[in-house]
Figure (cartoon, one colour):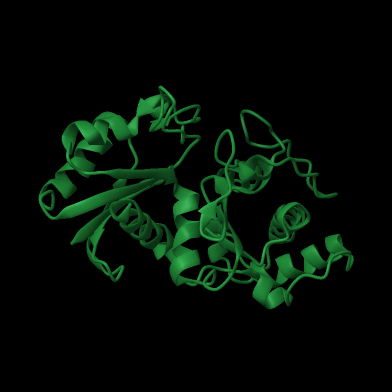
Length: 290
């Protein structure tokens, strides 16, 4: 019995097939281009496993329509990635795999679920996961269920206040100085002219980045009181940021709420880049058993 996983990110797609033990049997990745170029590659990968697959879970960049009763369920909706806007993702897959059930959620929800079942989220009631990379997104689970309402959360678009030394107006076409507009990878590059991965550890910008991420954690703490907040994504591969973020969050909190020990409360993913794929495999198992 095999399960399929699709982590559809804004920069790249990762597709994998795994077993009931969440072990990856085969995994491929390719650049996120437009649907006409990218989706045939997805179909081609899974076709060779079609008769063995019990289900496939998709974690996609968004915004997406998550409500099965909606006419546009399974669509990527108002994404800034124009070629993917209003794309019927699940419909496309169903036309190619008529007998396979699909689970549909956001890419960050999938990563949150991966950490919940096999990473730092294990044993916790309320888990929040953020990915900080090309964009910023957040997902939250309480007792194994995603926290959602009329749609999935768009935590990356919370409004943040500027660092006193930062006069950048923001990179988000919708909100300018939201978290994504101020702290995602493209905002770093647009502000400084250098990709974040190429900035030295002692570059003064990292203090600003920590300031913005700390605001995110402060807001999340006050709204949800989670057991743990996990920070993933390419920007968070700057391991020196963790101590800076801890320090900035403590300044904001001012001991107002008594949270878990900070080194165990604000952490980086245990599963690293595998969180999304592991989460999708777990979600595929979940839908296959229903």
